[in-house]
Image (cartoon, rainbow, N blue to C red):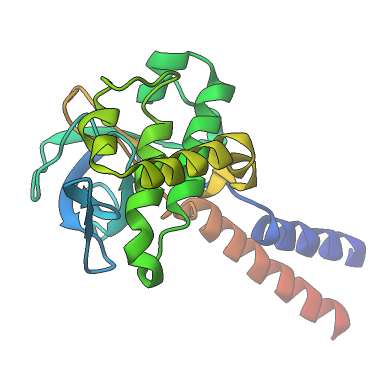
Length: 235
């Protein structure tokens, strides 16, 4: 009996300590708040750059989270709440609902692209706001597709607003992200928010990935039972 109690306690601890793939409710209604929970935004390329605030209407308390636009070719308006989004954890391998899937059709390639964008925007923080333009610009560039020309929607007019030195800086970040940086990103820590049925609404990524409530509740209950069994075994 004592051995069974110890085994049960070990299972409870494993559930608490082990990695759980977190997911939001998907699909769900998303409201674009504009300014992120950080409280301010910066401009670059003549437009606002992230992070942005997205309110997840299907989550308890309808939280507003930090999110980074990875789709400059489309748009969102402050206060708009008319789109439903598919929310896919990057670690799930479910990439077919994302916009990059239409370009590449390969889950490994698509995941690497989003991880590269995640690597770039993860460099942005309230302390280096003056550099946001290059990190977010590089992320947009990464997500623009496999080839780039001077007539691409991203390259013109956004990249053309930069000096030659600034363009070189952005492209260096792009190469770093695609060659090595993406591999340093833990995919399970990021999610892709892709509008469904609204083609002109922006796509976002976020690192605000919650722990699944049901798994936490189960693990907490098992942990409590395991602790009780332990106390009784040593009493």
